[in-house]
Length: 342
Image 1 (cartoon, rainbow, N blue to C red):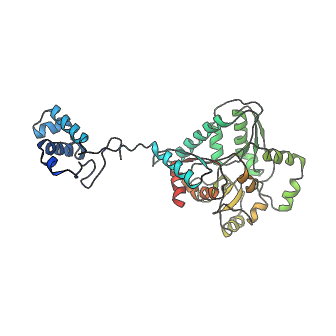
Image 2: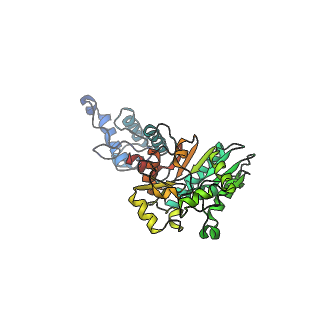
């Protein structure tokens, strides 16, 4: 309902209230006020047009409209679109009491690129006000974090470090620089240092991963990850409006996708997969994944999940069910879709 429009009743939008006492209904002023209110609120006539039609003066019409509002013949309800995110935030907190949500209001018909841009700007602002000097921040890569990295405003912080949470080494990444650019933008925005993770996103053999983790160069990165003061990520989803980067850049083959579907996988965080209840135990691909164990994510005191895609609602709902996020920055439509799943 538009701002300033009256509450609808069976008589139509802005109809005068029909619950009048008999004596009032017989009052000529009340009868005329109802007539004027119908012409003004239901038919959209101006006060000039009403005055001409009824043979009244404009001041008389204005007084009758005031009478209609003052006596309850017309009830006006204001729907403030800025309240919608607040209601959704309250609903998210009620459903997941440990969650700190920030819902970004958008027009209902906002295209996906606008949704991503607005949420990325909000997340960049949030990070700009919450990061502190000498923090180590774990960054998962993907389309959402890439958008956030491009929205960051420079704010130098002493001795900040940004460490990549999951590997990306592949021929595609060497040519595109997609992941490297994301992490470097974070470091440059805050005058910090970037620590890239030079391992494959997925290993072919779990034993190869275990051997790599014993290398000192890799151990330095995994130690920084374990010491991170904050983890920042989105959720990956097979049903996203903008397909997750890991799903489109050749990191997964057909057999991988078949196995994930057979194991009931709903989404991933930093290329570590989980089911609809947030569980990840027994998902075979996770043994070969380079991202952090989800128990580490679940127990971390400062995790920030950023989502700007209603197509990720199921994956986000699963992550929240699994208590995999403490702070959530999300658009209004996605937040509503997640609540509907609950």
